[in-house]
Each structure stands twice: as structure tokens, then as C-alpha cells.
Image (cartoon, rainbow, N blue to C red; front, side, top):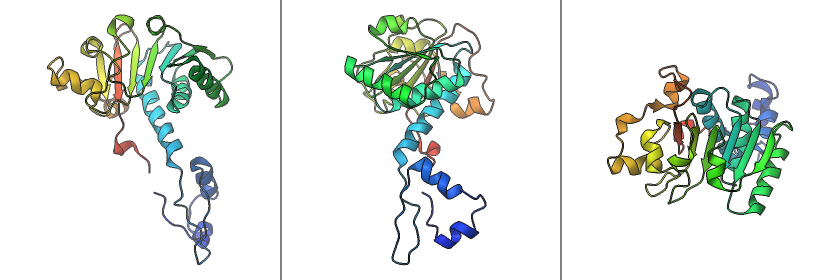
Length: 245
């Protein structure tokens, strides 16, 4: 958390003028005065920051694992994180089309409106995905958000060269991708979670088959994607090491 800072400290000890105002804007902070009239900066809205850093983590992985010429992004899920994922992935690749698949047409439409309102450039087409299989076979990057007990992404629907971004599903019984996909893909992660725990528990894949962590990509210890036809997976369930607060 941001430490308590008195009114005088705000003026005399912070190295960057305007830092306090910037923090208030970024974290949607609200002032509250104590009995001495000092102002606390501990009232920080952390949820928007969590959404942002989760999306940034996936986008960083994509910059190493998706094909450089990726143009089409499919997001499976219509929760709050969908908006951040659309913006983040579009920032690291020259995305031309973002498709969203969800449970109802109304939820998809509301999500598409929210993505555009959040600042997705007008030249990027926004579409509602209908049949999930048809949507999967025609995209370059798939981002699955949520916690499901039966996988929605089947290997048979994923074309060679696709990058699959799996978010959430932290419990053993949660899956987003099927066993065939997890067995055949080149896998990176930040946390061992459901999509990996189940196939590891059944002996389908070994822990040693995981190629590395996000840090290995960022630090150059692994090159990431090595050809245009391999299917890559980034499994992210979050870790406290990534939490800025």
C-alpha cells in the first residue's frame, strides 16, 4: 500500500512534483482528513490496477509468443477483464479485428461497446463471435478469461501458429483448454493452475515439459516462439510477485 503522507511531506519530500495527483488519478484515490488535518493516501481502489496488470502480463507474454504478424484476436468471456485484454493485446500486435464470444448476445454487445468506449482505435474492427469453433479456427490469438470446469478450447479447433492466452482457472477442477491442446502446445506460465495441474496429475504431461516462466522470456533466457506453426500457450493465474500493491 502507499504509505501515509502528511500535507507538509507532500510538498517537501516527494522527488517528483505532481506525483500525488498522478497517483490519485491512476488509483481513483479519495482524500480523507484525520483529526490533525493530514491527508491519507491509503484509500486506493486496487481493482482497476489488478485488471490492468493482469492484461499487461498477458500482453507481455504475447509479444514473445504470438506471431509478429498476428492480426485477429478472439476473447472468450465478457467480464471486466475483457476490456483490458482487448486494449493490451492490441498494443503489442497490429490487431485489425477483435472478436468477443460470450454466453448471451446482450453481454457480448455491452462488452463490445465498453471496449470501444475504453479507447480501442476506430480502425480495429469489433465483432461478436457466434459459433466458437468457427471463431477459433480463424484467429491468431485466443484469450480465454474465466473459471470453467469443462474446457471450451479444443485442440481440433486451434490452427497451427495460434497463441493461446489462458487467464484464471486457478483451481484443480477448472479448465479452459482440453488435454490434447495442453499436450501438444509449447507452454509458458506464471503459475501452475488448473489447465496444467489436471494433465500433470494424470501423467499426460510432465512439469519439465513446461518451457519456462514469463521472467524467462522477459530476461532473454528463452527466445519464446521459434517458428510460425507452433501453438503456444501462456497460462496465467496470477501471483503475488506481480501485484504492485
